[in-house]
Amino acid sequence: MAQSAKRPEQYLYLSTRGRKTGRAHEIEIWFAAYGNHYYVMAEYPTSHWVQNIRDDPRVQVQVGADTFNARARILSNEAGLLAVVQDLFKQKYGWGEGLPIELIPEPGG
Image (cartoon, rainbow, N blue to C red):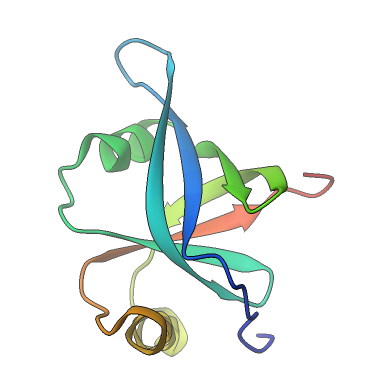
């Protein structure tokens, strides 16, 4: 996987589709970038936005002036990626605990 991408932004905006209402819901959340993927951490696996992702992984992401469609997936501990993401959060924010979610930009965005 590519090296960590340095982004000066502290937050990204993540829009999910409400699993009950079907309406867009946007949150502002801390993130880390690695290669061309973005990672966010959920404090609670029962958060509404996490439940929305479980129901429909199609999301929209805004980082700075860039807005794109992406697919979200909850990370498991495959090939050490979880440790890499936790380290990126520790370097950027001083903590790395939570439920990590990968945001994979869709081709053509």
